[in-house]
Figure (tube, rainbow, N blue to C red):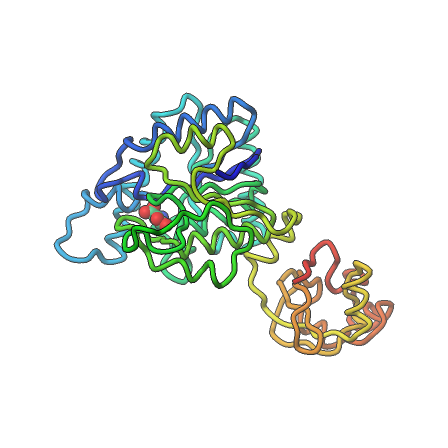
Length: 365
Ligand code: GLU
C-alpha cells in the first residue's frame, strides 16, 4: 500500500454511500467516514466534505412515473439536501456548515474570494463545511455537473493538500473488474496521461453522476496543482482505519507540481479567457525568464472584447504562454499597444499603472 501524509483534505462522498439504494439517505456507510473525520480533526488536521446525495435522498418524495424532468430532479435535490445535511449532522458534535455552489460562483473573482474566506472562517471556528452543487439553480452548462470535479475545485479554493474520493469501487484498475476477474488495482499513479484515462470506462455507479472519468479529471486538476488525490472504497469501513495509519487502501495519484499560489490555481483552472493578447519576443523573454509583468510596449495585437479585470491569454506566435487578469480593457489596449508605459496617461487620459497584466495576476501555462 502507498503511504500518504496530509494536513487539509477534501473528502468527497458519493451518492452511492449517502443513499445506497438510490431513494433515501442512509447512515450505513457514513459512520466509519465520520469517525475518521473526527479522529483526524483531533490530530489537528482540517477536513471539508463535498457530499453528493441530495437528488437520491429526495427521489422518493417527488412523485414520478417516468424519467424525472430537470425541474423534478431539482425538486428532489431541494428536498434531499436538508435530509443529507441532517444525516451528516447526527454523526458530529461540532457544527456542520452547508455551502451550495455553482460553476459560475467558482468563476467570479469576488464570489471565489468570498467562498475562500468563508471556508477559512468555518475551519477557524471548528465547523465542518459540507459542500454540494446548488442543483436547484444550475442546469447543464452552468453546472460543474459532478461532485468529483467540484471536489477538485474545492481543493483548489481551500488550498488543500489532499482530495479523498470515497466511492463504491476500490480504486483504479488496469481492466474493468466487473468484466475481468484478473483486473489488478493500481496502487499508485505518478502521472495521469492518456493511458490512464483509457483505463476508465463510462459512469459505473447507478446512483451518482460521476464515474472513473470524472474522478480522473478531478485527480488531474489536483495533481497539476500540487494536490494528491486518493480514490478509496467508502463502503469498506477498514479503509478508514488504514487511512488513519497513513496507508492508501485504494489508488494514490501523486501530485506532479508543487502547489501554486491560490490565485494562480484559480486563474489556471476556473477562469475562462475572454480574449487574447499576442506579444513580441522581448516581452516573451521578460515574462518567461525574468518574472516580469506584461507592459504595453511588448503587445503586438489583441483579440476579443474584454473589460478591466477579465482573464486573457497571453500568446507568442500563436502559442499560449500565460494567462492573467488584464488591468486595461480591450478598447484601451487597442490605443496603447506597442507604446511605452509612460505614454499611457497621455494616450488614454488616465492610467491604472504601467503594467497591462501584473505578474501577481499571471500564471504561466
Ligand atoms: N449534486 C448531486 C446530488 O447531490 C450529485 C452529483 C454527483 O453525484 O456527482 O445529488
